[in-house]
Image (cartoon, rainbow, N blue to C red; front, side, top):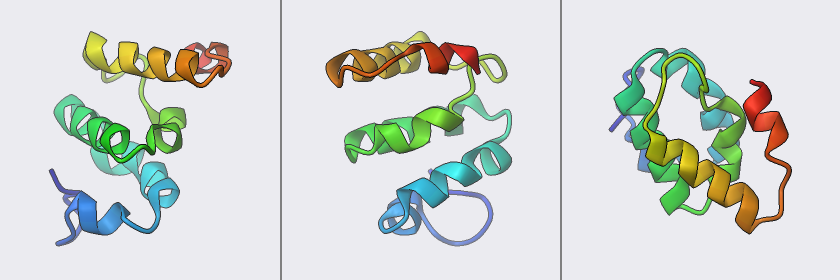
Length: 88
């Protein structure tokens, strides 16, 4: 998957600046749940899931159960407070 704003693939674009790229996700990905999931899995595979978690939509678009379970598992495995994730 790529950001549709430019020629960079996520592996190239995100390599040095995961947090900055994560901040762009709501604007760039909008309501495209498939793209959201692709990016979230990319972050997870890169061991950078924490960077995108604050931007993951919880209401609209609604993502797959697998994504939300992966995020909750991340919170549990890293002994983090999951309550702020549900507040968004």
